[in-house]
Length: 92
Image 1 (tube, rainbow, N blue to C red):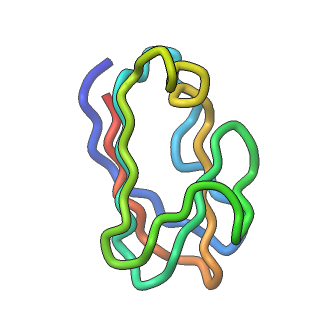
Image 2: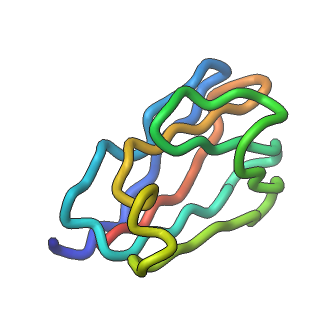
Image 3: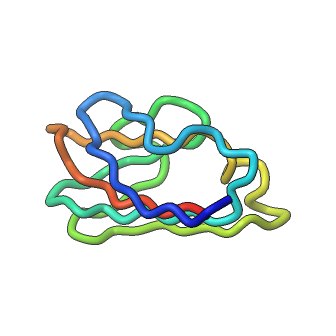
């Protein structure tokens, strides 16, 4: 899989950030907004639940290994309170 650097505008309803990727080996998300985001793997994102990305640069990254192999390749969703917020996305 080729290196992909993109962004997604996250809404105030669950927004798909990345589609399921069977070849995904690495993934990183960086919250480039002034509002907290919540991330979910394989199901709709819900405010106050899942992986929290703090505002102004909160981030998460993962590489494929025996622990992460179950969720890193799933659909990834995010949500914010007011919507219209930027999430930087890297995958390989």
